[in-house]
Every structure is written in C-alpha cells, then in structure tokens.
Length: 296
Image (cartoon, rainbow, N blue to C red; front, side):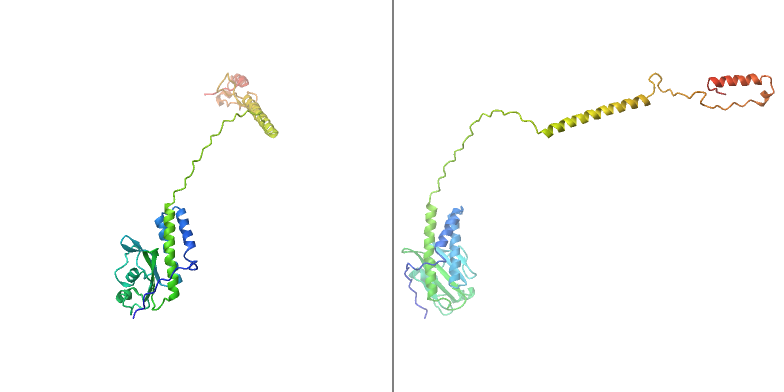
C-alpha cells in the first residue's frame, strides 16, 4: 500500500526559513537594480532557492516547475536527476499529476513499490524516493517543488515542512518580482550646465626672472663675444704670416747667391793649357756673383 497523500501544513508565523526568504528577495532587488532583465533576475533567484531546498532536505536533485499557459514547465533545477530547464511536466499521471490534482504534498518512500510512480522510468533515472509539494498563490496552484533521492525512504515529515516553506517563498519572490517590474523608472532631473561668466583679468606687473638667470645670460653673452674676438685675432695673425704676396701669385723666393755654395764648374783639359784660361775663369767667377748660371 502506498502511503496516503500528506495534507499540506498550514502556514504559521514562525514558518520562516532563514535560507529562503528575506535574503533572496533582497538578492532579487540587487539583480534588478544592476540592470538585469526582471525575467532573468527571477530565474537566477529561483535557481538559488532550488539549490538551497535540495541542500536542506539532503536531496540529490531538485526542480521547480511553474505554470505557463496550460503547461507546467521546469523553471529551475539542480542535480543530475532533475529534468532539464524548459521541459513540460507530466500533469496527467505519476506523482506530479497526483500533486496537481489534489493540491497536497506527495511522498514516495520507494519507487519500486509505489504504484503511483513509473518504476521503469525511475530506475533509468536512478531515483528511489521523492517528495513533491504544491506551490499555491492564494487558491490558485501555480507550480510544484520536487526533491529526489537515490536511496529509499530518504525523506521524513520535517523535510516536508521545510519544502513547503520554500514553496511559499516561491510565491513571495514572484510577487516581489512583479512589483519591481511595475515600478516606474526613476525620473532623473536634467542637469543644468552652468556657463562660466567672463571675468576681466587685469594684467599684472611684469615679473622678471630670478637674479641668477640674469647673470647667466650676461656671462653667456660675454663668453660668446670673447670667443669671437679671440678667433678673429688668431685668424688675422695666421693669415699675415702664411699667405703669399698678392702681387706674385705662385712665385717662390729663391735664396741669395751668397747663402748657397755653388761648386765651381769643371774646365776642360784642353782649356787648361790655353792662354785664355784665366779669362774664362774670370767670367765664370763674375757670373757666380750675380746668380745661378746654367750650362747646356
């Protein structure tokens, strides 16, 4: 005999889960304030809620299906045994169908012996026990929250109470997302650009440079003038000594005859005995006094 359907526990004032209420609503506000699209921000927060629900109930997988038109579509999931996002849920039979028809929590202790569950499909998925609770918005059923385990009899009454708290928090988060989406965008007043007014600026007294700058300029000028004067004087003296006379270009001065010792020309032997030898020698001597004599 399968266990009877468990009645949904009535919400109480102290049924507040610190893992799934205020901080997730605040996280939703921060996501929307960061310019996330409201639909994407809601999916991120619902996925975090499913992860926390699986952690608290020690489940291997968890999934949240929400109503979209005439179907129940997987909106958030975690774990390898959970259905993929966007997959429609079977609402005609199975444990999910029983939860939707009765609007009460459904517990399966062992998928091998529970007639409400497809044993072959559960065996292929590796699921041995599961717990499903409805997500209600007032009197309207808007979804189901499911957790799965790979061992039989994994969930107890306390797990059902925790999962129902998470289901109520789904409704709170959806309402908060709807309200945030309906808020008008904040009106930002235009910023008035102030033009600078023209200000008459009177020219102040001319400021001179520091004293050391003036002395540097004076000493630099004197050094340049001194260098130019020395260059002019040195160039003038070198030009006076080394340049040739402008009246005889290309002419080289020869040393005087007195300073150059010219060897006496040899006289032929025939002339030594002649009577004119003295006169010839005299002529040569006279010629040497006046300059150089060339012989052919």
